[in-house]
Length: 528
Image (cartoon, rainbow, N blue to C red):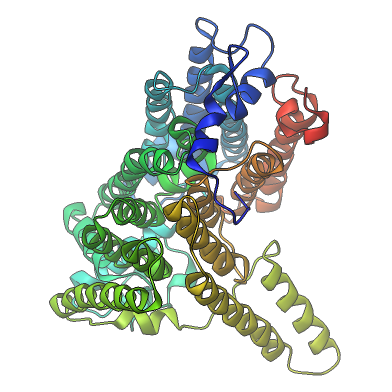
């Protein structure tokens, strides 16, 4: 995952070659990590599958009490929702169900890997069934861990009323507070591309003023992104000598992806699905189709502009000289910007999303290195009588400049190697990692971007895999303790404390006490 040297296709394939009659590499590790007679035993996979289904159902039930609802929703007047959302007992019960179910889903994901047995083509139907059993309940849950879906509805209403979402916040709408968005969106311009604006407008149109119908439309768009990942993640993994079944389990079935792309239905799902599909076609000598798909991804969320120079390299091909590289970069840029210009001309908003991207933000989070550094420096600057806010802004600016330089350096660096497309894709993964890690705000779903990009070229069965496991548990806990919908008369401190206790206790149990899963988190030297 974190090495810059691409694994040769033949060595990656050898990770699944039999050794003394048993699969080698990560497949053997996962089998060995499970107890004797557990992996591949009759009915053992079903236990993990249905355990995950129960976990997802618990989260569905928990969403009734602490999932996000607009105040205009008719559901808020249904007796079950009233009891679950307006009484301390109901809210705390739903919080416990949600948190226990979320960590049980993580455990089911780990146990599925231990029980699946051989990681050959026979594992694929099992993984598909897991995705359906675990994903469908989350698809029906109230929005969890984020209320961005309600911001999408507000932005769709702006479009429907002929207002420019690149210059108007949701507060330009009448009764915008009844839509349920976070207050951060009330004055903020829309940072999304023209394709997603049309999706937002369509979701509002089909909703007929009923937010739940609009929410379902956004959920289906997010599900389309997941389907694209299901189709193209295994293909790209196989192209780079990585076991496609393992890649599917590690990335698409990862609980952090499921909660953020299904339960929260972030538009990052469609963005990521389109960019992965585009990379696949670019890597298989169909660069024009690849550029079109990546441009569609940019038209959802423009962060995937980062992928364009690397697609240009794939177009140029292995061993290309600088003249051909610059020609392919120019062709990629002109085609992509031309398509975006057409989209902007059709909706009459042009490249308004560029200005929205430049909107300054003081939002930061404690686990983002740049965010923490900026906050600390700003605090001490204030303490000494200086301009603390300016000091924080300087740190954020430095992080942005460094991330841009990192992307440029990775794009211009030589790309010779045994597996050319794997080298390019890994450089692209590092470019996205630089942008994420040098930002003051790191959202949990940003981890999913990096997990998919690095997973496509192989995550080694050592500390890299353990890092993924720990980060999965960490970002699940962050989600559980961050955004819970609780009425003002319910003590939010108590609810959050319950979420922390249940979530952290279950996580510690899996890491240190559960004899089935604790071995997964051990240091490499302690592995059997």
